[in-house]
Amino acid sequence: MNRGYRDDRDRIIHHVIRKGDKREGLQFWLEAGTDDETGDRNHNGVIDSIDDTIDLIHELENKGYEQGKDIQFLLVRGGEHNQSTWGEVMPHFLKWAFGISNVTV
Image (cartoon, rainbow, N blue to C red; front, side, top):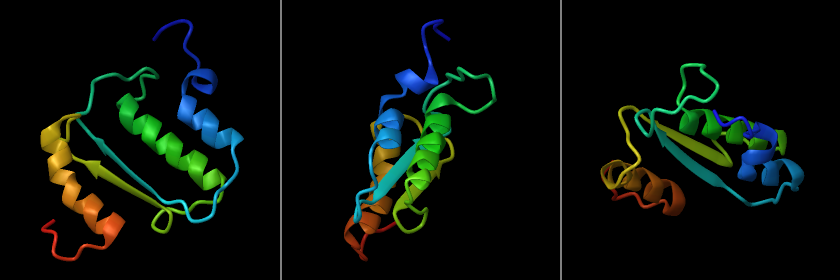
C-alpha cells in the first residue's frame, strides 16, 4: 500500500456520502466480482473492490438507507471487471431498475 494512502481521505465517494445528507428516494445498485482484481491493501483476505463496496454500503446504512429497500448488492462469484461479467449482470440490473419482467436472469 502507498504510504500516503489513507482510507478517510482517499476513498472519495465514501467521504462524500459520510459528509452528505440522506436524500429521500435515492436507491443504489452495486455489483462486485470475486475476481475483479487481486489487490488487498489491508491484507484481510478480501479484495479491495469488495471491501470498498461493503464499506460503502455501511456508509449508506449509517445515513439511513436500507439493504433490500434502498440498496441492492450483487456479488458475482468468479466475476471480473470486464464486459463479460457486466453482460451477465445486466439482466439483474434491468429487472431491479425498471421492473422489466421478461428479462431472462
